[in-house]
Image (cartoon, rainbow, N blue to C red; front, side):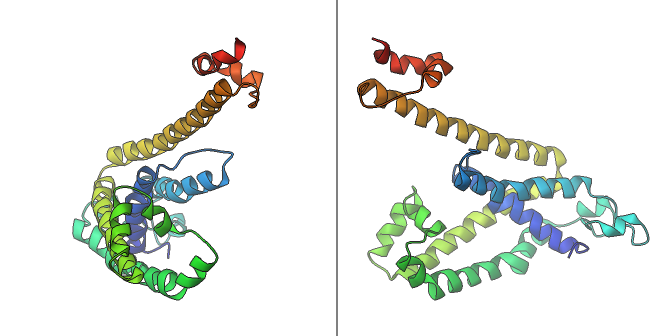
Length: 239
């Protein structure tokens, strides 16, 4: 529905709300050789980029001209986007899409496919949340007292609270291109930072292991020469 401003507002709020903030919540990293990491970045970051381009650079829609073939972002002109209320942005998104998705997710993933997913050891976001602080220990404690489906409902209510809060933050991006641009940069840089920390931790742990077991762990000379700082960790190898 490219001609529906209401649909675009829904896409915008989801892309700049829960999807974008999940990059920070789950430390998604732009690790190019990792299919799992890069897929997570693309899934959560690319809608943010797309919504930025459409919100601020979509061609004006003239139903008699070339603009009619493009996405219709605002009801009339660009100024009308600024007239959309906060209630419409957040409440409209919840009513048109998010609450329906939440109900369908619970019925399909937890009720209909719950035993199938568990039997085949498939992982969902639920499994990841269970081992993450601070929510994980709380949910694990509830699992000892309440039925699993009840606890999973609590989890989705927490998901709803997180998504609603981030949608309110996305309202700022709807009204301000500067704020939106800075947000895009911040989320993008966080994926790079997370990747850098991942590489450093992996390489540093390799150095430490090699330093403590020089006869058992082989480390490439190219890697040793790549960084003087990391090379200090492997100094025992040269002794």
